[in-house]
Structure formats: structure tokens, C-alpha cells
Length: 296
Picture 1 (cartoon, helix red, strand yellow):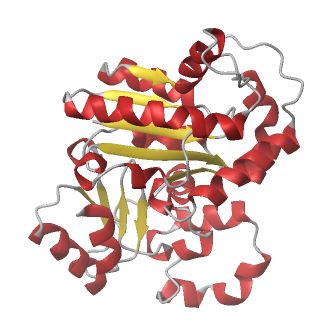
Picture 2 (cartoon, rainbow, N blue to C red):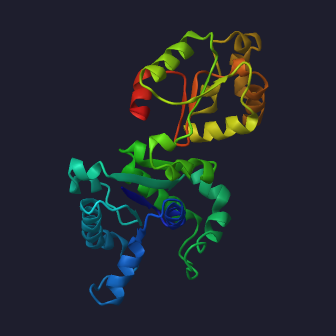
Picture 3 (cartoon, helix red, strand yellow):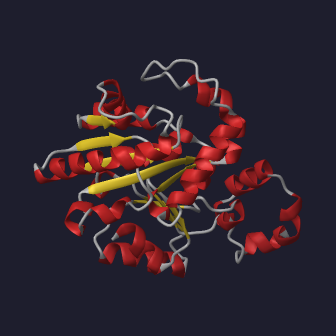
């Protein structure tokens, strides 16, 4: 298996590669190391600041290393920012089936809230000199560029919006069998019954949880919401009796996010179901096509 990780500078690519190495004992290749080897050996006149030209120069080398590893049936983690948006065209289907590609993108809101933390993590794995050119606006601009380059492959994008650890955790599971899958439902709900039958008919393994007997906590709801990428209002059971009795349709626009989380945590019957929670994604409600795309 090849795990290919790209993203803008300071998005944690090297740290994730190091952690994956420690968990699975897969070796990892840093594109920056290859770049500096070529520059310092005099095999190119490009400099570390020629990013656009460097992708054209470096990617063919990385591409053939990946192919060689696949042909030799070797595992390898490859991380770096020099991956072209159309990288898939360089590999046949047989090669692509052996590659897990992920692009890390931090949202503007995340960068503005956590910029000092992002800078402080720059030298966690490798010692970097002071980069006076890296500021908040540069970080926002670079992440927007990577989003634009890879937004046509949404399943490959890892959007860092609220909780970095929670939103990258699924990278540490190399197979579906390793996923922790939790099915949260109300057994009397016909939609929940259909979803459960769909899972059972296909042999999908999961832990079952009755939402009426064990209501999601506020901490769980916050984590699931962050992982889902959905607006918070999608977590409300808008067709339920409780939602209507509390007149939430009219009250919701004036409620803060904290108030909404607290309300959802107070009564499981207010929560949209079923919920399918994995380390990689969270599905709210049951849409067969969505289940097929994520699970099959």
C-alpha cells in the first residue's frame, strides 16, 4: 500500500507520516528530502523557493518511486506538497488501487483561530529555521490553492475545520476492518430499520446503540459534527414530536451553537437518526447511495 499525503506548508504532513510509520512500521519518503538532495548535489539549478517549477521537476521522480514500490509489493508513505492536481493520470487503475491519496486543507477560520499553534508545531518532527515569509495570510492563501486544486476529488480532501486530531484520525486505519463503526438509532424508527437491514444484508460490522436509552453526550455530538462536515441543523430531527413541541423551527435562528449542542444532548429524540459513526466519517440519516459510496 502507498499512502500519499499532500497539502500546504505547515498542515502537519510530516507529523502524520511519522505517526503512521510508528503505528504500521511503513517507511516514509519526504519529498522535501528528495528535493534538497537534488539541489545540494547540483543536479538542478532550481532553488527551494521555486515551488511551481519544482513540482514539474520532482513529481516524475516521485511517481516512478511509487510505481517501483507497488511493483515490488512494498508499503510506503510519501508526503510533500509537490503533487500535481492531475496526479491520477500518471497511474493505471491497477496502480491507483494500491494508493491512498489524501490532501490536508485547513480552513480560513481554523487558521485564524489556531495560527500560533500551527507555527509552534512547525519543528515538531524536523528542525526548521525561522521562516519570516510564513504569516497568517500566506497560510490562508496556500490552503485555498490546495483546496482549489483538489476539490474535484472531495473524498481525498481532509478538511481541518475544528479539531485537527479528530479530523485526521481515520488516516491511522489502513482497512475498513480496523474502523470503529457505531450505529446509533431508534429501533422503532422505520428509516433506522431500513438502514440496519442494509448494513446487515451486506455483512457490515457495527456496534449498536439505542439513542433513546443512551443519548449522545455534548462532547460526542461536537466531535461527530466536526467529522461530518455538515451544518449543525442537520443533526436535528425536524420531523420529531419534540422538535415541534419546543417550537424549534422558530427558535433555532436565535440560538447559539453552544445552546444547540446542549439541547441535542438533553434528549436523544431531538437528534436526527440513524447516525453512522466511523473514524473516517459520520453519516446522518439514511440515504442508500451515500451508504454505498462510503461503505462498499
